[in-house]
Image (cartoon, rainbow, N blue to C red):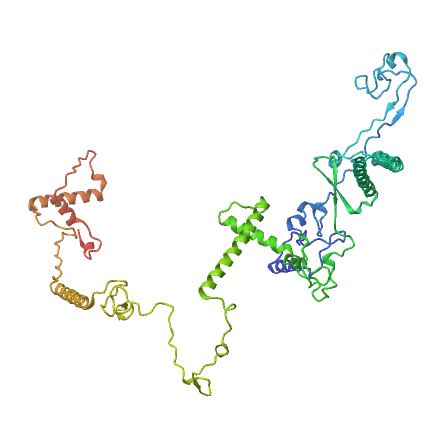
Amino acid sequence: MATASVAFKSREDHRKQLELEEARKAGLAPAELDEDGKEINPHIPQYMSSAPWYLNAERPSLKHQRKWKSDPNYTKSWYDRGAKIYQAEKYRKGACENCGAMTHTAKSCMERPRKVGAKFTSKHIAPDEKIETFELDYDGKRDRWNGYDAATYARVIERYEARDEARRKYLKEQQLKKLEEKNNNQNGEGEGEAEAEVSDVDEDDDEDALKVDEAKVDESKQMDFAKVEKRVRTTGGGSTGTVRNLRIREDTAKYLLNLDVNSSHYDPKTRSMREDPNPDADPNEKFYGGDNQYRNSGQALEFKQLNIHAWEAFDKGQDIHMQAAPSQAELLYKNYKVIKEKLKSRMKDTIMEKYGNAATEEEIPRELLLGQSEREVEYDRAGRIIKGQETALPRSKYEEDVYINNHTSVWGSWWKDHQWGYKCCKQTIRNSYCTGAAGIEAAEAATELMKSNIARKEATEEMPVPAEEKRLATWGTDVPDDLVLDQKLLAEALKKEDERKREERDERKRKYNVRWNDEVTAEDMEAYRMKRVHHDDPMKDFLN
């Protein structure tokens, strides 16, 4: 919980403040108090609890979150309907020409238009209405029930009670009238048997209808704690339906059966308690043993199996849905169980035909039943067999001693160069056809031939050709073999190169009109190479 102060805090103070906030949230430290001495919820975020800087709050408080600026002019009162303040005896100037009241005009008069208005008759002047103005706040302007008089609802209750009383009175009269007709028919002359039977049936129907009506009347007299009124198919009102709550109110709630903290967990959202709240109690005395008791007994298991079958059938491609078509799902589940029983019985008959039924055969001899025989087996003190019983060789789950493709040995009987093979033909390719001794000789001949070819190739390999030395020019550039330089032209090119370098050193000697020649001869290139200063040359500082 952040305080209202925004002063600078050191790292240690900040750490202590965080630890205090965590302790308050965990309930290990008392909550912070505001200016009024009320506790501040430590789980309120900082942006809500911290006050703005312009309020200059010295202590933590939530007053800035409340409506602390209240306007005394706002009111929640309403108009005094039908109130009159004054009734004049004669017409006044500026009053309503129809009724004579000063609070409205003839255009807005709500009274029936008179044949001759009060302006001309000065009789039956209507009293002035009480005019009020209110400054309503935000809630008052939007209050639907502002100004509603709850006492007016008493008339609605009286009207309904009068209707119920008339209905009960009418039903009582009808019942008395039918009882009188019944007594008169019994005391009168006898009628035909058929007519008597018809009348008895009609009387029974009437009596049943009367009993139903009486039951409805008795229900209306009951207390309202056992029913819940709920709106039915309406948006803003209308008819109501009664929903009966079948739970007995005297029953103890399941979360009150055991108040121990470590007892069964109760989930208030789903109102479920799966485990037994009193596992040590006498099962004959307790009426509730947890929700799991109902889930694992009765029709709950059948319904669970039905749902699982519907899900599995839907995953396998069948168009079935438990909620959309429950009858179809139940019918398919019944057919599935019938087919499953038939398959089980068929499998049982097949097994009995193949292996027989030991239950229906003759009794097993006593010698075989007890495992007795005349074969003598000798054991030592440790229980090991000395003689009398041969040691059984362990057998593999795979087929043994099965030869394929004309082989006389099994796969894996030969090993060479990290490869398995057949011993009969020394082949390392599985499921190959056996070639016998001829295949072994051919393989050895191919191996010898390959070795001789490798040796011959190594012997006839030529020596690597030595790299030719390239004759380089003055500063490392390749010189063509057919290059022929004219010494006279080379001397002229060297002079031109000296002049060009002098011009580069002193640009004032360069003429205004300079003729440039793009043609470069081999002599010019050689003169440039010879005159160029190489930075790696140790004698470069002594040139020129």
